Length: 428
Image (cartoon, rainbow, N blue to C red; front, side):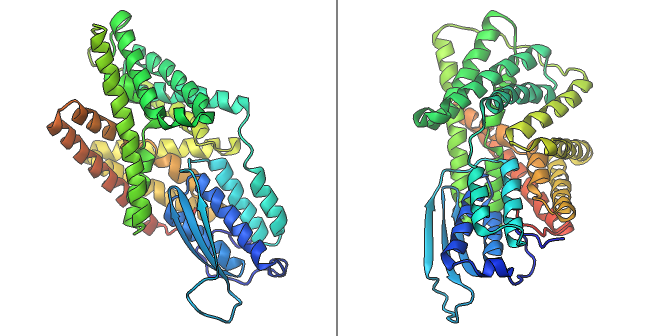
């Protein structure tokens, strides 16, 4: 079995074929790999660990520094007799914040492993990395739009809402997905995407509740825009801060807060517009639907997130099982010990399972870790907190913000304890 490419294992000498590559060729491959790991949503501590491990295997000394919008990579040749801490080649790379792409993350990991095991040379590895940059086709985009609707409807189902709420959230979710895809080539629209999406979702939900059927409006709005909630961003930010990646964690936390502000502003602006029109949305009587709806919704949401995280089709089952496992453990532990304890134990199990999977399969543990915690992250609670604040209900807003911090602490603590239970051998 080949030595894992992106691992915390002790360094070994590179194969002869790699040793014959020029200094700049080796640097070029590391830069290409680091760039793609960043684009595919890797957090700072994992990206820096992976880049350092690969550079070491290529006979390079590398000091990486990563943040959500770029990287600085400093290199020197490990064979250089000069042990000066000053490295002689520095690459400064400006990048857009990455988003999770599990298929390409696994492909990049496999390419690096093939190169370092001598099964492929650096030139072929760089070509293979460049091939990952192909944009998704129209069929993939259509499936992504549908998954926005499925995730919205399933989240409403997980909250055991009425059928009207579920259907309305699903339809609005599809429209939000179409808006997202349409804005990918329009930078100005992309900048305001969250505010526009929240405004559209709130306005449409209010229209349905005014002219057709009573709705639990807040539940429908939150479910409709759940994919845009920065729950994973908040979790990654606190994780980076806890691992002393202070600049990256602070920047990511600020980015998550900006997204929440845009979502809250869009919702509040839509409600003001509804009042100006003289509409009076009918609020449905809150009641829980059948319990089986929740479990069907869990399976549907797991599939939707497998699509939205762009997992390879052969990995759909792993991703879906991970999402169901995280949610199931959290629900069970939460019923016995309370919600915060449920989140803690759910993240412990997911983190330990992801490390075990990475050890056994020699593939990135992100396939288990990311979908396993996606239903545990507190994005919707943070959104409610800012909405309350913007509506001048400061006490309720602050109480909700404290709830967000409590869930975040429990989630990140669970990940850390899971890493202690089964230590990670791979950085991804």
